Length: 344
Image 1 (tube, rainbow, N blue to C red):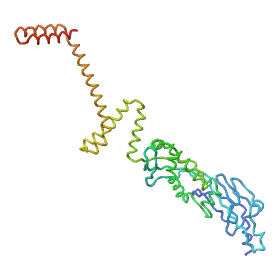
Image 2 (image 1 turned 90 degrees about the vertical axis):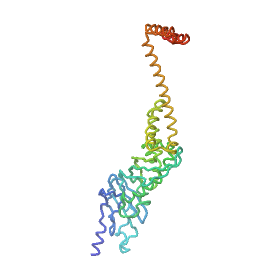
Image 3 (image 1 turned 180 degrees about the vertical axis):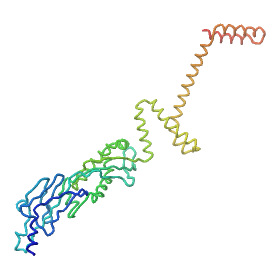
Image 4 (image 1 turned 45 degrees about the horizontal axis):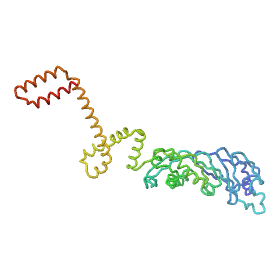
């Protein structure tokens, strides 16, 4: 019976792994109480790599393909070659398979606001989230640094480590990008590219390749969000200062209306002072232009309505009033001069 058990141990002739789609990154081929048959085969499929570990050290890495296993190609001695040691081989070998396919839609985010430093606004607290994709690129390094001798290592096991790397490097990514913070917040693609540039070397240190990253949302403090909205509004009006003042006025009017409805206050007046000055200038300018326009229109209308015969009739009536002593000569002369000007 012991002889039959020993013989069975020799017949591992095919070593392969069919992924079951459960997010496994590393899987150890079951070798307990069994030995690789001399002349057996190793099958590594596309999107996989295999690592042979002999006596606790990585002996070789195999990419996709089929390999014939012999004692000349592998550091493995079978039990049959060590029968004088009661079939206990001094060489203990393990085979690990690694999935190298892309792991997509991995989530990252800031559970709490984080503080970043910006050259324009100093310390800024923000929240952001998005997703990223990665793959195992260096299985030897991933084995020695992360997965080790575990029977199975999954995406879920690595998730916390990668999220921590993202959060740890956000501040450095913004600082090294040299992109103004408001531009970074308004352009999520630039933000994502800055993160990839900062994170790719950190992922590579554990054998992972960062294939892509997206920023789906950036939440700014309320005061910075207002500045960003104003910056976008200025971009819409361009260099036209008239349109810019109109934009500022439109932004200020609701605030003044709200302040008036709530009774206002010294603090509110102080906060609205800048907008109030701009608003007053615009309203005064518009009022002045409106009055000048109204006066010009009234004068033109009056001139169009004066007829010579009406003036002459008025002069005759004024003459009667003078002859009766109602008007003095000076009053008559002044009215006469005024009426004659309308004929010129």
